[in-house]
Image (cartoon, rainbow, N blue to C red; front, top):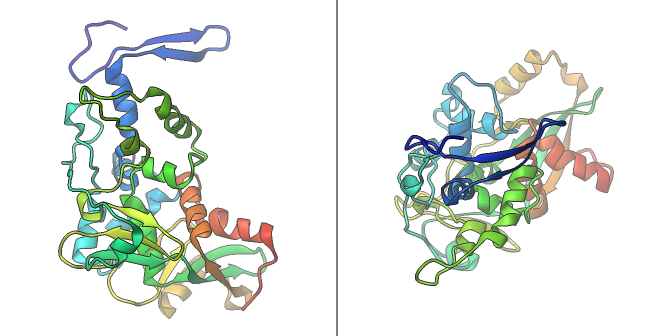
Length: 318
């Protein structure tokens, strides 16, 4: 490529296998490497917002439909004021203004909270949800297809909290195995690229687990709890109230009611006699499995919860 690149463009030298029409590798400078590494700092919700256009279909597993639910008029009263504010505009700790090509225009914060999960859970402004939850899942008997799950606010807080977690933290939680191969490779290569800054400081911990934006600036899971730390308003939840919610396989969230249940069944042309409910105990292992499935599948509950459970043992009916 020409070295006469515009200010918002980067020059790359790409080596291609002519016979297979396949890229072998690219020769790039620090500017391009910085842009690639900055992907690890982006919250999942920000990535969805950047990738999905206004009229584009879902493109990132079930996360796109989860994020799209923020604009659903039927869920307008689902959020706390502050929760909606956070989810509408997920932010990073990283200042993207120094990059030659900016992938994100949001304003960063460097206000970080340090501490263990027990320290966070004792803080007055912390969302802490149990890593053991109960879901009641509704199936179609004739096909064994998952129709929806009935969930409490803890589970829904967890789902929407995922949109606030940076990609690097997701990789950290899933031990570098998200099944998004290119991103996994980028994450695993970071340790080989790390070097000290002029003051002798290393950026390795930040890139491997970037933390969360100042208002939800620390996520940590212990044996019993996962916590997000809030730093203002004192609202200890993302969703409002303590009612039950309907979560479909692609992570569409709505209020649960008899009318919404019947409406969904009518829409799918399924009779009540062809429906059964199964109870599930969901722990940290299952929560992380749902996170992993949400990145690559539009059936996050089936692929992240049901299929792994089926491999372990037959599912009891309730």
